[in-house]
Image 1 (cartoon, rainbow, N blue to C red):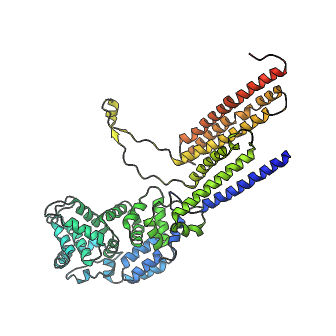
Image 2 (spheres, rainbow, N blue to C red):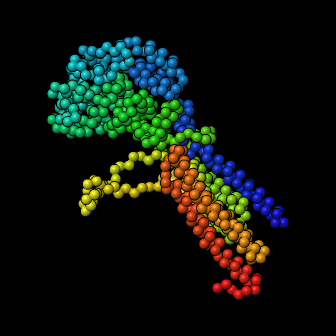
Image 3 (tube, helix red, strand yellow):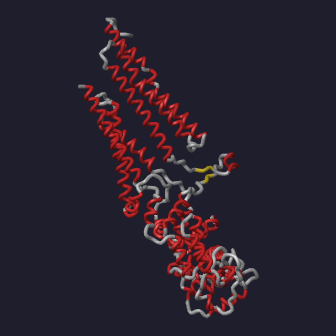
Length: 545
């Protein structure tokens, strides 16, 4: 009967383990994350929307080969198909000299009398090359001074502000600043400025007095100068259409300054998403998530790039997932995250119940024999599964900590400052410690089971005492496993298989010491004392003093 009960218990434990593993695999494959955006969600958002190559082709056919060339360059960098045909159409589109200089036709510049375009034989000209020559600046001043738009007049009037980073317009060497102001005025005249940014500029320029400095406007001029030296006029104009504020322009320009080689990718993402500031913010995210997310979004097309700009979490690394569910996860992310976490919790409880049944500790007073013990083990397993399934994204760079000079300490005064930042334990460290703790918990349960088994045997006390002494190596198993875990962790760190973390490595040894001490002092020693007294009583002698 007992054998039948054990077989039934083993079968039940196996079934629970299989169901738990299946639910865990299902949860693992659901592309929903609390701290990440899975790449498949971006790809699903782009289905049915124009691709990067299609947008570049449309720009080329619309007479804007400058933006088309940047989009085509980004597509080539990403290894997308259809770029050969697009490049052939671009070659045909830049046969006209004006198209190569300006990157496309411009209705405003076409009406400027006396404007002379430089000769560009290779590639595209830059906006600065068009506006910087003295003759062109004079022609633009004459043309724009007759404008009826208040915004154009306000920008032209800002020529007399007191620049600090630039040489003022009125002095020799002030040509770049005047060229930048004329570009801004031309953009206002072309009515391509975003309404929000146009209102911001108009309010800012209304407070500029002649000769007075204005740091905010000068920063805008610096950003325009940076972009006008890198983009042709048409590409620059198309980018400005998407700029909602000066802050967004500055964020995108700062990203371009530090990532000049990725200008085609950043430009394409800004144009496709219509949110250059958000694109720059996510691209600048620490770790590989920024560039990975940008490339994934551009490969997905317009829909994916817009989803990339509007997402609330960085893009994580790709992996096992059920890609057919990505579209649903993108439409209901919160529901998908809760469902995934619930599935991981259920899987952990089933696995904990399976472990408790496999160890057959029921009725022996062990922690896992009760619902509370199973729940505790399930929570530990659930936490471990969650950490494995939800790796945290890289932290953004921390601002400098509060520096406090200790005047009473000559060493501190000479050394500078003492940071008061408190270190935060990484989730991977917590997951490693939880894994070592689960191993020690398993050793503890096995030792308790063996102690209870020997204690309830019907053999004489002397025999049971000898059996207890024979299991000393088992009772020391926690220490062996702890040392092995520490050694393995240190070896893997030396080999650079895992990141160096002494806390995670030595926690294994510490937990092993605690487990062995608990088993021997709390359980083995009282049982041995009980067996010694029982053996003396069986031998007919008095109690041992």
